[in-house]
Image (cartoon, rainbow, N blue to C red; front, side, top):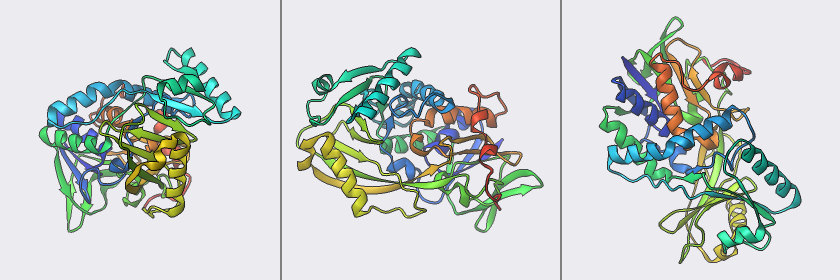
Length: 370
């Protein structure tokens, strides 16, 4: 069996890894280098609980993927010989006013009722865990099972691991899906056709650019996230901090990532003065000592956004076509479970998690793809 995967980010690489381990002939097509787009531009938060938008299929999918991460990280490090920076450090969610404090209390009660670890904290208790927190913190919640991974290390190790088990990577410009009638039979490249028994579209925010998928043109759109990396003379934080939809992620080597804006502004991948200023203000509000930190790097990434915030997973509109896109801010977190589930689908096995809520048909509100 031959499978062509369009997109060499963490999602495409994870699917390729699992298929190659099952004996499939896999080619990953990427216009740049593996992980050059959203995978490298992320923060690597594995915040299944803290970043939950409420009970539902996405929450359960995130929990399932987080549960696989320790073994997944160990597997990648063994296969590649490279680190991935997996750290089960926990995540501290902060509230700054009464409404957010009330919402945080409701979240912890709900999750504790499901048997998950979620600890409500007073501001004083939060500061005992993270002494550098600002004075404006009103309350907090600790999610000790949330974690982080260094996404840039993950991209490198995952691509290397996939290569070690037989995945081929090709730098190529994809023109569209090759099909015969209602069946996908390969990928049209510039000057040639790559034949395949199955095609996987894992092109992230550029999914809509792949011609011939049959998806609505607006099924997946880009969401820009601006980011800043800081460095301090001494480590100020030991846990990921989350508040107001933004976060601080301390790396083990002393770097600290501040993110992220959320801008539905097309394919403009740029850092703006306003975006940078808002991130730095947020960082200083959470941790005033960061006012003296050094700005090391700024960047922006385009995340694949869907209107209902759910990814598209499973068989696509054509026979032999499969879609794995729309992961938005959960791409790094959902990498292990997506690789497993998509491989099951492509190999004709019943998926171990029901993919009905993630079917492509739910997003067919616009004109069909060409």
